[in-house]
Amino acid sequence: MNYIKIEITNNMREFAELQTAKLREALKGKDLHSRFNTDWRTNNLTGYLGECIFNKWLIQNNIEKTWQNNKLGESDEYDFLIKGKKWDVKTNLRHLAIERISDTYGLCVHKDQVGLHADYYVWVLIHGTDPLKAKYGYIMGYLPARLIKEKGEIYTTIPEKGVQAYRIKVNDAFPMGIAERTMRGI
Image (tube, rainbow, N blue to C red; front, side, top):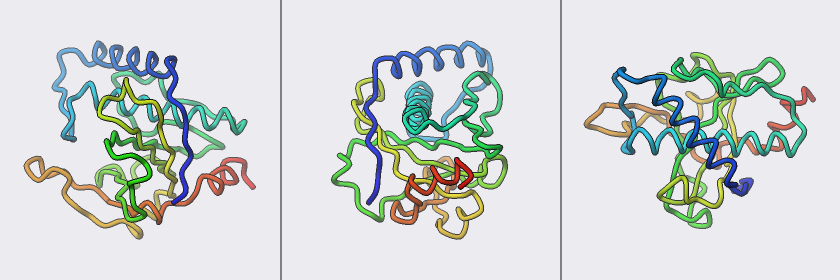
């Protein structure tokens, strides 16, 4: 299994906290709920940290991008624009150590998101139970949106909520080295 380990810095944690607070304020009075088993705050902190982790990788690899991190209170259609292509970061908080995750581990993207806006999906796992205490994030790979339905299987993430997603085996995700070539137009 190929993955890229990225250290989570205090600046990343502070950014995630600030963005989550701004989002909460922007959506004040609106019906907020999570499609996940986590609370709204944990879900958003995790998502913003995942974007920070991916952004750090982009910076380390000198890849030009536009980060859509200023669209508070609006629909989150994608996270990054790179060479005219839309990239959406999907982030999970997991208590399992990276060494214990098997090649068949399921990376998810919600069924209602596939094919709507993003051209590519990239998956980030954050190790821990509290995103603000996590030390590392792992970029697990990516896939073009057009391959999600082909490589994924439908499952219900939370039966009582009826939320369906595509689960893609981590070993079916493409390594980030290929993404880097795609992002450079090579």
